[in-house]
Image 1 (tube, helix red, strand yellow):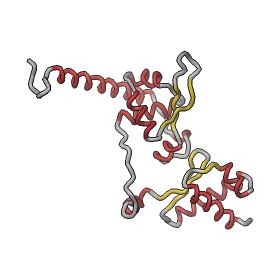
Image 2 (cartoon, one colour):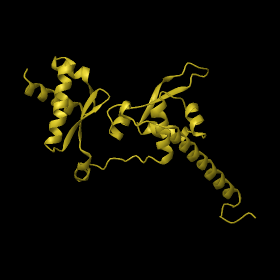
Image 3 (tube, rainbow, N blue to C red):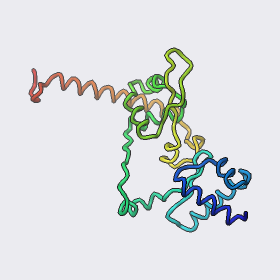
Image 4 (spheres, helix red, strand yellow):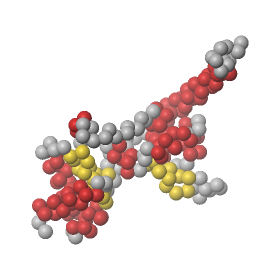
Length: 204
């Protein structure tokens, strides 16, 4: 099978699958070694970019996927349903950052870093498909461990966790300060509710 044919087969597989396919599976499908298939894929990535096409080929932690380019979104929504966009608040981003850098990690460990409960944030991130359960810690109660997903890499446009920027102690302190502000806001909100009745009138 010549290079052109190999590229066509790989392209067909990725198009039909509609999701990331591991290099090992692609190599087995075309009956070639992984190094050869990787070179073909890297060549395809370059060519898609140079030809300014509406799709591009991305790598996600050793797997490859055909995707539409983000700049094509405004045209796609004219003929397709508008996809639901997930809103990542500061709280969700902070929680996600902690998980990304400390994974696998338990809820309790996240809460120790942030200083507040993380149940809502963790549940939302699981719902959005950005994190998932990654087993259980060998400790009393066997708490659930959480880790980022392939969707996390896709969402932030990175190939692997090794591409994450270095996280310094100052950033950790910022997380804690934000968590403290979160607690204060909740306390103030609760205090205001205690001072007013159901009609919004002051109890004082």
